[in-house]
Image 1: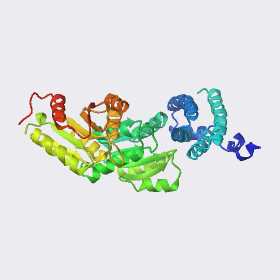
Image 2: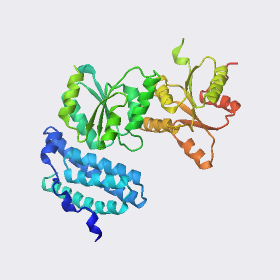
Image 3: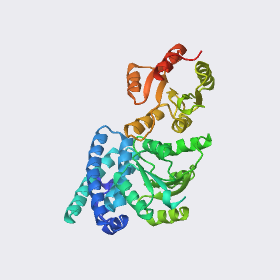
Image 4: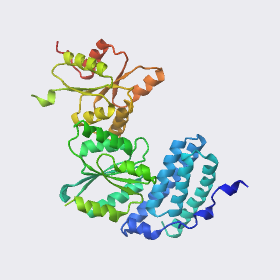
Length: 125
Length: 131
Length: 138
């Protein structure tokens, strides 16, 4: 019954996991630059995931908001649309300190991170 | 601002975004000098050391954010300690319209661009300002 | 004027009477020095970066932004090798706890922490020590 108020992964399916056109546009078609930038993005994703976990334990909402906001900007810049949308929702949940929503969104985020890592692997990034 | 000796300062905590901004600027202005800061504190230090003509400024950064950066430069100008006025372009993932409007009114802010940065927008502005 | 040997001191203190007291005292102590003053840390930071004072007297408790702002700027600027200069900062703090004293003293660029109300003879000694002067004029 409590899932009624929460969003589901399917709610984010309208956004692509990764918009390759956008990404290539961002780097002016430079493949090498794209590879470099994706590698940094992947590393960053892991770091942010860990930070979120520790900040959540401590319930540091200001930090959680900052990390979510940063993740949102980063994801949207590289074309990871779906991830960006989820991070945006997490940013809003942090602003209202809505811990149950945030935790729920976090599981969706983790799934989305797996999806994008799979995408990168398939495309040899 | 002259093309051949232009100095840019990028103040952005996300490394990936810094790289993309830098690549974009270098392509447009091959002779330019680019300075990078990961937060407003580094940004302020670099500002005074290097006196960039144009600043790409993120708002939310750990340690010290864009608001503080603007506050410091504004005060410097108000007290006439700072003689020059750099052009500041805010690049932010902030979505709240009211907040964005307030930021747009700040000292030296020429434009507020939403992340992800649409490079054609920035390109148009830069080409306007830089000969 | 022999630019390279003229030293300067910056006083950052919001309370006008207190600031005037400091400035007057210091100017009598070292009349040849350039003296700069700021009533808030934003202005103080700009003066610091623009004028490169040798010594800064910084009140830590100020309305709006506190003195820590300058210490944070120094921390990043010096640890990341951005700044071409390194001022010495004497922090004025009412030092409520040993912990606070420890935290302040460990910060980059903090040369000393001095209590409020400021003991002027201690200030004189600190200025001599930090600016490596064997004696102060008059």
